[in-house]
Image (cartoon, rainbow, N blue to C red):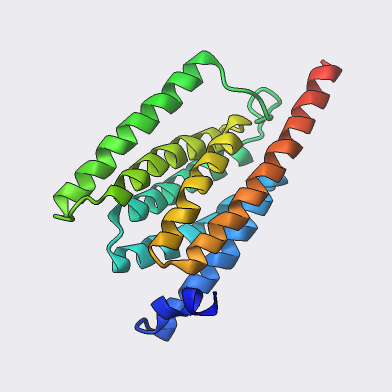
Length: 207
């Protein structure tokens, strides 16, 4: 187990290791803040995604890099949406997706798979079997990030599914720290779903 986490870091610089640890810590903080509906989910998430985008670019994982680049953009959008509280109508509350939002999420999922496939082709990377799991996870995460920005409880369902795909994927690739990070993300996402569901149910009873 010790070798699994450290073997792939023998040939990387100390700066890269430090950056990955920083991204690890801020990534966990971001998911924890999201669970608590704390707006710090976005500034902490920005630190994690910007660093991770850079590290994945260096490693040549274009699909994963694209996911994190998108997370960076959506973090700015989500930060704006969550902080917009000029009146009660504009304040975001936890809710469930309607049919229109489900269609948008599905469209994001399908478009993302197509785009990630195109990115691999554009950069001339051979598409292996593992990359198809990467594409599916990318689509799930893209949709989940959008749903989180508009505070839809289903975002946590997508995070859980996506995390369960990438935990073994990163382990297979030998990226032990990232695999561990997404395992922790899975546990936090399950906890967050239960907490948001409790809040949503309590508000439904009040109404």
